[in-house]
Length: 508
Image 1 (cartoon, rainbow, N blue to C red):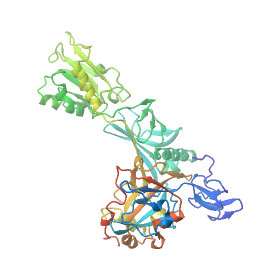
Image 2 (cartoon, helix red, strand yellow):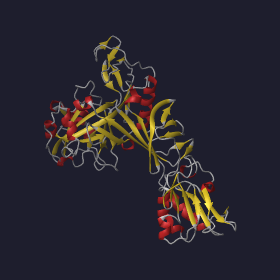
Image 3 (spheres, helix red, strand yellow):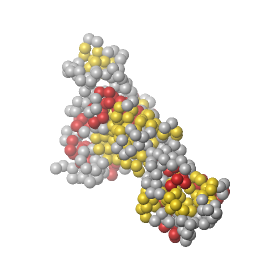
Image 4 (cartoon, one colour):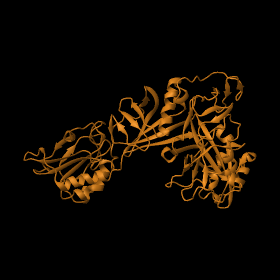
């Protein structure tokens, strides 16, 4: 992100030509761009006095269809609509609808299953946006609600821990615009990198440093994570109890959340295992399940333990016996230790039997690779909806299944999105499902993300759509520099099944 951008300058009418450049009206900054130069966002340039998008408009080609010849030679095509169009026009490189009253830059006609369709395409300027980050790790990253920082600027906070993963909530309008110019720039830059699948190093107050990159393993305090835990301590016992039977007399699965003790656990009782008399520290929840056996940390099972024996409170001689075989193991199998009780019933370290070693390896085998997941989350507001229809509430209703049949399909760069229920159009999308470098920024600051609305042409008319702006794909190709990329084969084609929708219950 450019550091020399000044936000807040009062500028005269947009798109006005000046002696030394032209005004860019693609966002509220209204840069004056000199010939051959780019604006503050590096997305627009001055080509012979004409405002021009630096990047091409991105089209995705259907995986099961050959890209037809007109993509290379549009003049050889007569412009008729194609049944089941083999390409989809994304919002990447499309330009924006700012200011709000402008129709979307591309409203493209197509046919799907013999039905006339329209796809409304734009690059949305999202001031109200952020990312939700899922980090697969048992390590303790920091206290819940702790501030997450980049270059000492707050960009978000730690939220709940979810079964083997730590969640972060980053960005949002308060960090982008409410915390000062430097914090806004740092936040926007971090969001942009995360959304474009680049690594970002963060520091969590009261916790660790972590490097996050979508689709890659997290790096915690300089150490790359390898495994996501198979389950909590209790679940691990439930999964592997039968495999330990006959090889170990007691198994304690150490976990920051729920530590499991095999012979007390329902699984051990079901297998008629003899009580071992080994009592551990912590708060007993239900038989064989203990909370808070240690403080959170970077050791065994996400605790601060380096010596698992330290959680033993006592060994009851009424139940324990010399020669008792005891396994300590973590929920990823990364840590494991084998002990045998001596004649005084004191645990002594011993060589691990092959059967037990194989069982520990089975735990590791059942752990999925540790990854970072990044979901872009944004609210599609004024300029986006007005760019689609003159009556935005009808668009909002049309995307919601609870209002009708979700007449309008929303995608980002052709990737499927999750739409939150309730008011507005609040969406989430997995950035790894989107094309490379799909995101940009404007220095207001805000994130620029591609968004597409696809619906039947008759439904678009019923919504009050900008019917006079509908163009064919041939017209797009004739007037715009495009880049065609292959759509991912592991996700739905954006137009799949769209011919079966019908208008109902949209109008008040």
